[in-house]
Length: 88
Image (cartoon, rainbow, N blue to C red):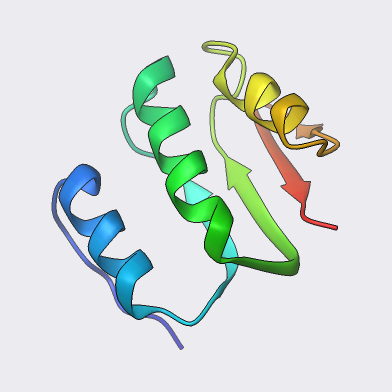
């Protein structure tokens, strides 16, 4: 079950963090700037459940995904232009 929310991630994502009990899967495919990607990854990470997945499109556009994974002791995996990591 999911709900589509259209809006600015910097407004909508913090609101969701305040009401969701946890997140099993998060997929980033919005603005691919370093700052925006890091904002989304860092904002959702505290809610990510054990074995939860963060995935992203275009992880080679900048170093945000790799640095986020390294900073949290996560192992990044690539699939084509995308990537994912699993919280352990």
